Length: 88
Picture 1 (tube, rainbow, N blue to C red):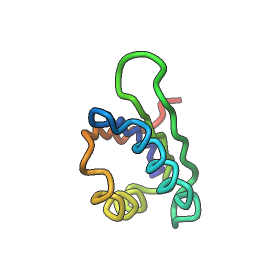
Picture 2: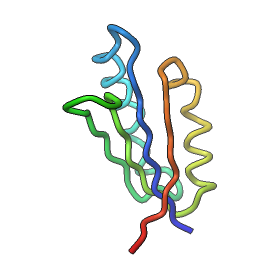
Picture 3: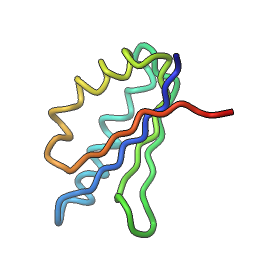
Picture 4: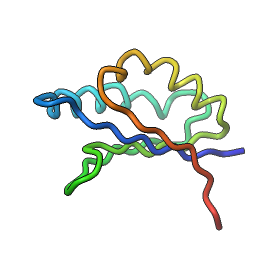
């Protein structure tokens, strides 16, 4: 089953620019990964989490492999992830 994943990242104090650059760097090759349909990075304009990643995967196992590879790189910032399926 296809899965959409939304990840909110809140940069540590003084690390916003660095986190933005890091996210852009590590997300660039993601669309080439097995099972990845696409990824999009958003920067919040008001309140909430500062960065949101929306990615689409052919199956949950493909996202799990992707997340495992990135876990060490992002663990220094508070992260909240939600796996979702579209209702339509």
